[in-house]
Image (cartoon, rainbow, N blue to C red):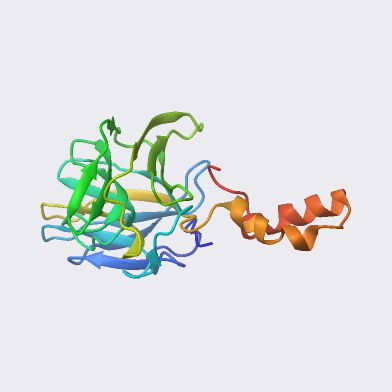
Length: 240
């Protein structure tokens, strides 16, 4: 499982994900906030259509079912910006040709989208986010790879919006696991504060299942201790 809480010096990288500047945009370190340890700040450049992508390399994953993308973020100003987060192949301001992702327009309207060979579907409902507000966004692929669930939560865990799509799901297509944001106008400004990204590939329950046979025969107390240790690489599942 891959995830990042951006504890390292965030103007260097978003390890284990890559920092991929768009038109000379980039990332900078940012002081943490209460309940948000480790924040990276995405910034634009003097030119238009700039910003940054934080994610895997472009062909990192082919969707097969049970994949989950999660991001905790806030946007200080929405005007002229476009955000895409999830599994997709967009590397700049242009929309994805293939992917399952949440797109946030400059109006703040968040829409769930799927795309296969530039044939796109959009959720029938949307949610309008507010500036300077932390959100937890998720994109979940069901076990059969036939349904995508999009969701946005507030930081108390309350579900603010959810919708699904069952069309134009790009299975067996190379995608990257990514969040990108761009602005259409020039000028160096803060575009987004990103607190967390992941877990992109499998849910924690799938990882625990891998160890189920090994754990059989152990005492219940020891079994529970080991499960707590291996769960999500020794860390709590954020938002799960």
